[in-house]
Image (cartoon, rainbow, N blue to C red; front, side):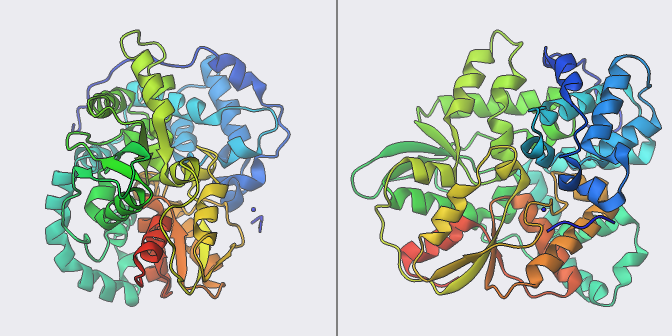
Length: 440
């Protein structure tokens, strides 16, 4: 194994893909087979198989487009195994835009390939629950009673007796859903107003990490931003888009765009890397839709990760109090590779007095979350999660900070499985604690 210190119920509506990029063929031919992507690809690192690398998958995509390979079990298996982490995009010297290619291929798979019954059932349940906060809360609230039993079984390694996907669902379930207080629709700016900012509250984020949303609003307000969190925004569609459910993703995106258009905000702040990456892609998603293309492009141009936004609005206005802590920052893939946001979160953390920031070995290797990947491909996700936690545990730190809800769920579960006592936070929580002079 190479080492480097570098996934409606069963009868779903089948809708033709309508927004496949016009330069798809040229993109598929742009790969020069240099191999720079290989050491950055999680599945290639794990299995050392050419067809489980970006280069190999591009070859399969091109062969399928030319009619040389059918969309069958083998083809779908290779596409499903991809985490879509986009590390290959960062590494590629030819500028191959792998993200739209894998998403477009998955959209074709979803409209032309009939998965086995159990797989269809499992995926249908996921997409009937995760994008809907009320359903997710209703489902997970009673399951919280089982978390002590889950933890006890896991401590004795008995969870391994369960089917992999059932085990994955139980493992990723947090010990609690956090504070149930609602996110205020409006948070006034402190002092003179610098900007009016919309806040994505999310679906999984809203249920499991509501305190991150509230910390985000407090920090933005302290820095002179009026924060608007429209109640009707819903899911951004990231999970659906990355899984090839394009029709569904577009429906979520239209609702999201319309919801924020009504507020008249200057920019939209996002504190989940996967969501921000998808929202910045709305322009591409609706490129062939005359009614929505302009609106989607304008909306995408307004989207900022919260670390980007705090950097853009100018020098910090709110005083930072000392916070004695050693912190390692984990790059969420769709933040660093999908959005190119690498420096800003680190700068925010390093600006806190008393904080020492360090880096982990294999820092940019995906943790295995990848949307619904850790649920539908649990074996590979478990290995990646364990590998990431091992690297983080080798450091003497007080906090592991990362800017994505999926990463937080995955890493907490992996640390618990490994018996490692690591504390995970969102970077904005560190900033919030410093401004409020509180401990975490």
